[in-house]
Length: 244
Image (cartoon, rainbow, N blue to C red):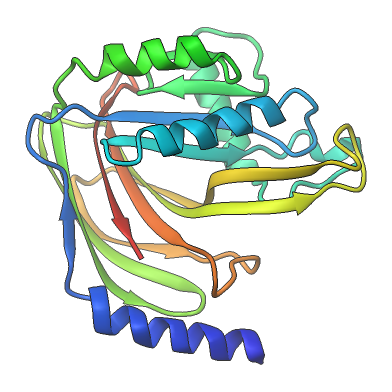
């Protein structure tokens, strides 16, 4: 009951401040999307989680979009990651096909859908970001939130520019700290940044979409929505973000 009251209070403030706001990227401006596939049950992942948080802060004022997808295939080994979803594991498997890989692993960092490597490699991440920042975006994306409630957010989106395969819209939680009591990371306290809480994919270049809010979302969480477009080669061609 108290949680619902907090949400109602939060949403009243939200509607007063940003209901009519539209967020879009500048035309032709370079964008970089970092997608980390990770798990709280993986002992190799904390270093990548820490790096992702560092990159988030380094590029906070640039069009570098940092996303953390928690996969579910580690859950059987002692610790169930509260942020994990099968959909994220399936998404990673799709990337494996794109990169012609027979296996999936964590931590894996995918940059603009074009290249992938072990997520804890800082120098490679910095170099790849720098390289991608030399390329102009082929698409622009505008996002506008229409309504929001305790269990969903309704938004409009519109892409312009090159032909796209689809557009992905994700709900992002800025950060969470979790004490792990079982599994490979037992007795550790882990910080995760820019956790993807909900994800939908649309084929249409513009329209209306609904993002579901999972039950673990708190009224105190800092939320944002990121939208990014991909071409037939799965390369990310545009991205935009709107804070909630």
